[in-house]
Length: 167
Image (tube, rainbow, N blue to C red; front, side):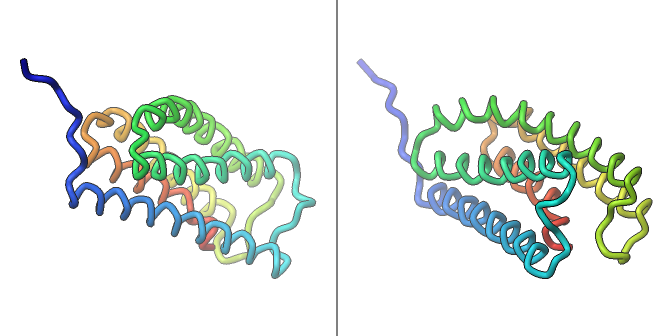
């Protein structure tokens, strides 16, 4: 009688999983360095309105969850990865709502980064990033059974939201 055994990942698959974990670590480091730098040079402070902090916690939470998801895959904990995926799907919806609301609130309050871009230009560019994030996450969820596509779409979605840290 034949039994079904779960095949262990190939060497290529393991290297690819480690690559995506490395990218998640790099993204987290970029975001921490970027926003840490803002605080050090006085462009950001903890005196910001509550909605800015809500946005920060929500978007930083995504980075932490994304890093954790990649760690779970490298560790072979696919079942926990799938459970966390359900949480992240809801988290992504919250990010789109909060991100869009923050953009409107920032423009209304005339809060924008240094005058590199006009408030209108910043609004358009950031909203495009939020919408790209939403589309890429939706595609990543739709293709979650195709891990090759899923992981690339989720990485691309995460890259879309780190632009402010690079500003």
